Amino acid sequence: ILIHDTSASALRKMTRANFVSGVGETNTPAFQAYLSSNQSISSGTTTKIAFDGEHFDTAGAYDTSNYKFTVPSGQAGKYFFYSNIVISNGTGIRLIAYFRKNGGSYFGRMEATADISGADPNLFQGFAIDLAVSDYIEVYYIGSSSGDTLRADNQWETIFGGYKITS
Image 1 (cartoon, rainbow, N blue to C red):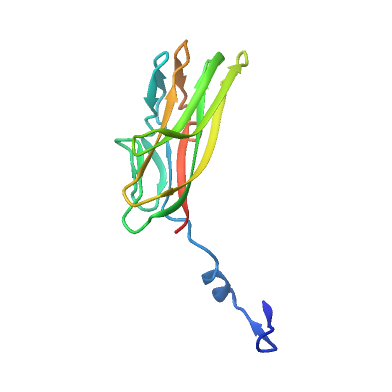
Image 2: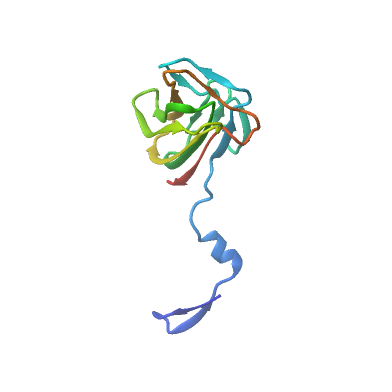
């Protein structure tokens, strides 16, 4: 790439290496976890989703035993998180899912009403948030009046992931 440097009135050559090294962050740490088996949610209860498998985890920051992502040392910054939740037999029910930071109040709440006979509805949500070292994020689901089953027919249906955007 040739760039005109007006301060020196000259053309400057920018190589691929120069260009790539000068572009933003590497978006790590990054992870994507999944629900490995169906999870029943009791009627009217708030339950942490048991994302107990991993597709990838670049920094070992996702805990498959406690189902949470924790910001590693030296990695404070802005993060983007997403989740997709598939509910079996979701007819005439209210679907609510959200993220929690450090076990406190929720953010990024997603809510929908499903009334699709014979279909399994899903909720997709995404949210950006500024996090400090040791902050952690979890995903919760609130069961409908009939109780719900979060579906895990394959590793790509009910997922939770995220990555660092900037410092």
